[in-house]
Every structure is written in structure tokens, then in C-alpha cells.
Amino acid sequence: MIISRTPFRISFFGGGTDFPEWFTKNNGAVLSTSIDKYCYISCRKLPPFFDYKYRIVWSKIELENKRSNIQHPSVREVLKFLKDNNSYEISHNADLPARSGLGSSSSFTVGLLNALYANKGLITENSKLADEAIHIERNMNKEHVGYQDQVIAAYGGFNKIIFNKNSTYSVQPLVLPKYRLNEFQNNLMLFFTGFSRFSSDISKKHIDNISKNDLVLEKIHDLVDEAIKLLQGNKSLDSFGSILHETWTLKKTLSNSITNSEIDKIYLKGLKNGALGGKILGAGGGGFILFYVPKILQEKVRAALKNLIYVPFQFENSGSKVVLYQPGGLY
Image (cartoon, rainbow, N blue to C red; front, side, top):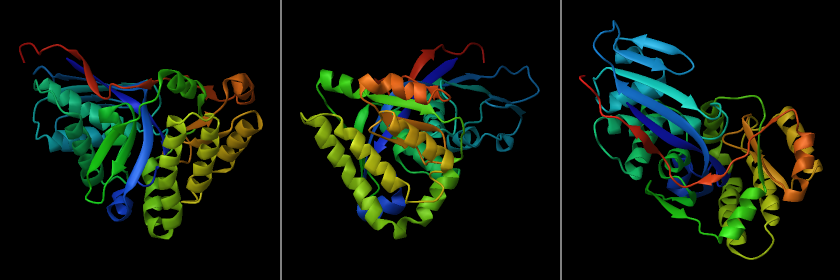
């Protein structure tokens, strides 16, 4: 039995510039962190006593004999990519819901790769997990996704990730004094809006509009370094809320699917009760919303948004890892 644990992520700035349709011509960068909320994949070789070859447990339970009949796209394509013909039982659990803006689908793909490699007794480098997950999601599953989610899931940590014109990337950990990092984390609030969406559908509209949004994406890219300069300086962190508000204002112009009247109401209510800025995470359209709120005003914001689920979190640094490894028995 193998169990992999892969973190979800929060992307603060630069989202949209991590698509190759943009960064191969203009360069890209994001400021993001993995958080202590995880996707768990358990995997074991299936004993030869069943009348099926695969048992896949997610929001459905699939019992299949042919790999090509597996409905879960990541499971099907990862097994195809690895040319793995073993019989498997694969089960998915998670701390937070899917399709909610925290990179859950990429965490699944990275975590499944990690688990299947571990099942063969292999320890896999972060870069390999990220690169293969990008290939599987974009080229095999034909999903309209950027590169940041796979990289964050594989590496973990609070990082600036730079995407280069030659399609390479570099991960630069952001180092802050412990007291400043703690203050920063303590001023962030995460809420679930209550509705989910398929990010790939929204991202396709973003990709289609990239050529029309050059100036907006350049500004979104510039805000990455502006935020890092603030965090690594000694000025009040409250300006982070203003920069977050600015990136949300810019992001909304990329596509008419990013926000809606319900999201706008939530956001305005947060601002009215003490938040200094915020944004919908991921592609938009629903999922989780992040606010920057000074500690003294957080109870007021929680009361105003009492109909939403509040999710406390902390940054994490581990990335995808195997947390349980028990060598297989007779089979």
C-alpha cells in the first residue's frame, strides 16, 4: 500500500502569465504558496481474485478491466503515460472540495504519479513530477491549464516561480523573517463560496483572449515583484491588501466568466467589514475566495460572511510526498 500526500495551493499574483500561450512570448511569473490542506492518493496492486482489473474510488467507484474504459481522466492517462499494465486499486481523498480554485486537479495528477512511482520502489524528483503532470494534463487530457499548479504541488513552499520563453521554469523560495511571515499568514482569510466550476472551461476563454489582454497581463506580471518587494521590506504589510485588490480588479477584465453577481456581493461585503483586498482563487467563477484582513477586524469579517465556510490554513513546505509505504505482499 502506498499513500501520497500532495498539497493544495494559493496563488497570490501572476495567475494567467503561467500559460505557455503567454510566457513563451512574454515571460511569466507567479507568487504562490502551498498550504496545509492535502490530496491523498492510496494505491495498491490488486490481488488476482477479482473479475475486474482496476478499482478506482473517487466521487464514483469504477470497476474496469480495460484501462481505456476508466472514466477518471487523470487516472486513465497517467497509467497510459507510465505504460503500467498492473492491476490497481486507487483511492482518492481530500481535505477540500475539487474544482474550487486551489489546484486540486493538478495535486491529484502529481500525487498519483508519485504514488505509482513509489509502488515501483522509485523516489521521484519534484521537477519530474511537475513536468510529467504538465504533459499529462495539457497534452494528453487536452485541458486548458497553466503550469503553476503542477509546479506548486510538486515542490511545495512559498515561492516566486518564473516561466521562461523557452518553456523552462525556476522555483525561487521567498525568504522572510519568521515574525513577518507569521504576521502575513495571520492576516489572510480563506472562505468557500459554496459553488464550484470547471476551471479548464474558464481558462479556455482566458487563452482565447490572451492576444487582446497584453497590457493587463503585463501589469498582472509586474505586481508579482511589487508584492515581493513589500513582503521583503519593512513597511506595513497592509499594503498587500491593496495590491491584492488591484490584481483582482485586473483579473476580472480577462474574461466575463471570472466573476458573477454573487461573487461580487461576497467581495464587497468583505471589503465593507474590514478586508483590505482579496480575490477569487484559481480561474474564477466560484470556489474559494481569499481576503487580506488585519487581525483586529477578522471577527467582523467572519460575522459578515457567516453563511460561508471559513477555512483556517498555514503555509507548508513539503510538496508532494509519500507518507505511507508498505511493500506489497504476494502479488
